Image (cartoon, rainbow, N blue to C red):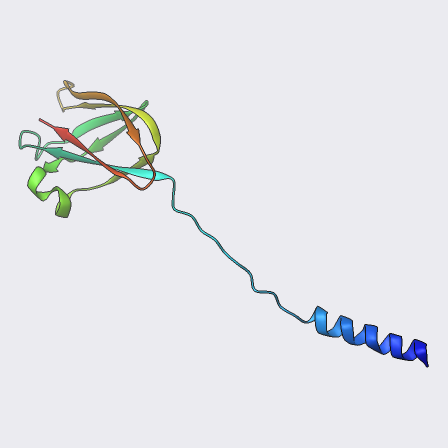
Length: 112
């Protein structure tokens, strides 16, 4: 009789603990990227500039400083200390500097 009670007790314990679904927790963090925005006072407004960021080259379209908040295009880049060189269409260097980029930060690069 004692073995039957122990067996039923163990069977019930397995049934109730085996059917429980534990809530799963999902955590997501922010992306580890920063953004660059190229702003000009007017000279390079409708011109493409060429950006060299630690050996990676891409084209950018600067916007006027007044319209930067509304119409400025953001370029996503990796965070950390970066060397940025901006050249105009003729190949003249117009910006050459080391910058520090932090996660989820938008850095404005002001061109003449």
